[in-house]
Length: 361
Image (cartoon, rainbow, N blue to C red):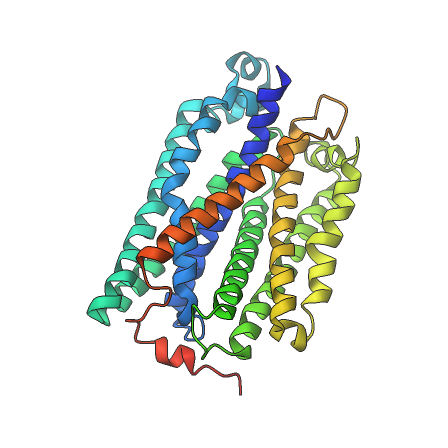
């Protein structure tokens, strides 16, 4: 049956989108604490709410683990036994160790999420500044752990779909796209909530400019990493590396590859380049949606060619639309539940007033 296999690949894309928004948002929370940033404090809680998908990842991963033989070539022992490359990677790429890594990585993320958000929410009532210091220490521990674990997740769930290929920069590639999309989700929600009076009238264009600047910065960063990965593989021209790109330049995927360059880099770069663009709420809302769609297209481009690798190139399926809609509904539901239970603004944070007073001049 082709449909269940196709559903597994489509579900994997949606799962990785959910994962990237969750862990990218937790990274933004930790980054604020670690750098001592003031300007983002009034809407840090939005990122905390978005990161609340992390504890659910292990549940959403169960269908993928049950479909492991449909997704991952290396999970078939009879195939591995006849392939010297896969046999050499077998100590890492095997079903048991894969499941262990999933549990450990998602468990570590969930622990950091729990303690960081627990301290933040507790501070709303206690106003205890020591909780901020605790979160700074936690964030300092989290950042290097995050660098390792997000690389493990990217390699396990995405790169190992084609276990003969490798890229030493792939973890950074996934990181750049994840934080970029998380910034877009944060910006979109902040503007929508603020326009409806749910945040604070003290948020100003300088706050919007800072969000727009970060989105622009990660547009450039993703473009740099994506080009670096392609350029080094193209320059070396090694068959064990370049076949991965050649697959994405045949069977209709060449149109996706060209589209990705424009949609994921050139258009956001031009649209967010100027100062007025970074302070225009309508432009920022539009580009936030654009970036989220671009990130999903990027994940689609990473995953789906592995489904059609032995077939006839790109094949359209209605599932390409079902799972993104489901993920959107899930994110809205989770955010709404959190927003009803907790303050949208970290009212006990000692940096909050400085955050409201933030100006660039």
